[in-house]
Image 1 (tube, rainbow, N blue to C red):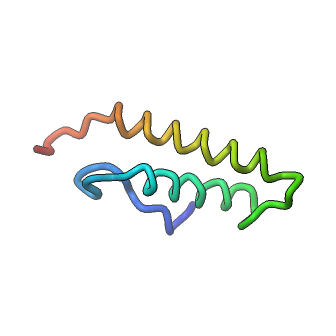
Image 2: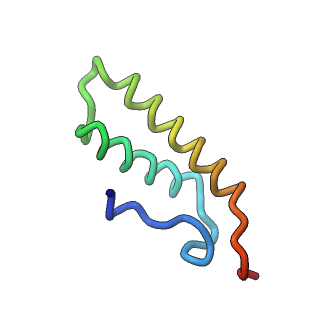
Length: 70
């Protein structure tokens, strides 16, 4: 879907930062909304979506168990 979103789990990425997670969330919301930067009347919904996706992404990465990694 979004080829520019990078895999953020080991072994593909180490030391993933909050900025990495937010950048992926922003790219995802841009893609599905069709807006690079939303108009002012959509900014609150857009920003809220980015934060929710970032929170869900962080929770997912924290919960994943990658077998075979050391």
